[in-house]
Length: 344
Length: 227
Image (cartoon, rainbow over all chains, first blue to last red; front, side, top):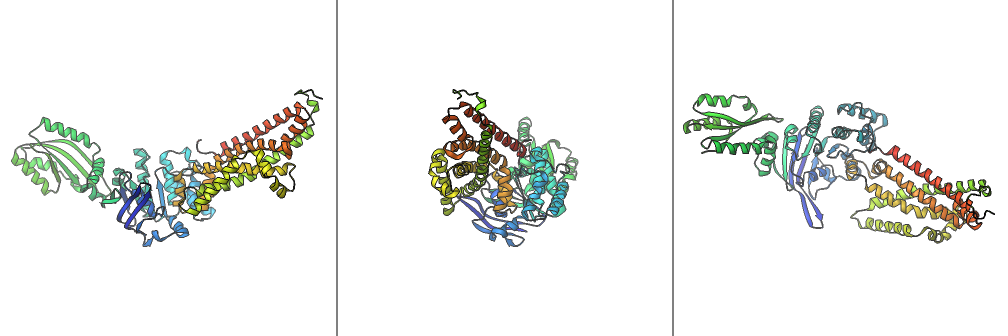
């Protein structure tokens, strides 16, 4: 359990004080993957750097399993840091060490004996799928492989928490998914809490349970990934969610505009389905009940999150007002979120 | 007499030449070992005290930095004279290869210290931070991160320093420190024997090339950044 209590961090610069993190309160439960999303400069990196004492909060407290990390310093803090693994955007491996030597680094720091170091590191090499590459140098590895070394190194001292600081931001989409799958696998296998900082909603949707959206140093919205995706409240969250749920949103908008032009009498509605709703024959039932309606599909997509699927569907409906109102009522009854985009 | 000829090789006393070569190499290697140790310590001190908010540390950085700059800017030949009393106290004599060591070290150590500081600054901040986040102590960061990660730069810096030290030994030799510089000056220049000067020059060039070769070879061996 990680608790951020009224955490504020202010940096003093030549141009005056800059508040990087402002009055943040967060609870992260054991074994969950907690996403923190925001654009650059939102304060998410500073927030997590305070989690392992690389920065100290100006005010407030951070507790890890009841111990305030903010009160620690010197050897105690270093001891605690060994139990907080961290992976980085640019991997931060030592180029002078081989894969296995890099993984042994935190074990050396912790004073683990030579034979135990070797055994543990070899086990981790196997765990992250780098068997056979243990004696390669980082310069011989691809980005994805380097991040696997980073993950193995972060896990070496059996951490209580794993912090991922934009760890997939320098990777291509496919490698990003591989690393995210690895994190999810580790989370499930070891019941390890993961704090995932990112600016990609894709990473949040794919593996996180909870998400906090940060803007200008504040947590503006938080909740389960499912709820935040289903019902984003703040403008910034809507932007993040729309980027992810519908990367082709701009395309759709232009199609909708075209359709409005070509069928000025039609009604265009957006339906959002959650979880099992996506499996129900809702549209076909609507057509059966109101046979006078002409329905055509403009665009549709379904996305999987950790809690279930979210689908979105754009329909163009032509027909008499009575049938149309009836259809909209039916959708409401079935708890499908309906938004009428254009009504003549 | 040789009449100013460069090629009267029968006039060369090869035993003397061998002994002088050995003295040059000895002065270079012994002073370089001391310079390496001192330079790394000074460079580390400069690196660690840079950018601190603490007033005491700031003053320390300023003082060390100032001394390094002063000794780097004193011409070597003047530094020898400046250090004569200290050398006499320390070594007991101002003649011979051992007497050259204090001035060689004092002149080259600040030069190397700056290179060491630069090498440490070239290390990616993120790597040092990663080590910190794993709970490494400052000392562990020094010998597990700073030194190994900057090793190619440290070695190539040491090569450059060694080569300038060879030049300094020749200069020190001219005022009595022994070695090839001394031989070229006394037996060559003062005795108007150009052959000796030429041979001493060729040997020094060979020694320089040898050190350069060894340095380059080592750098290639330890640098794993590009394979």
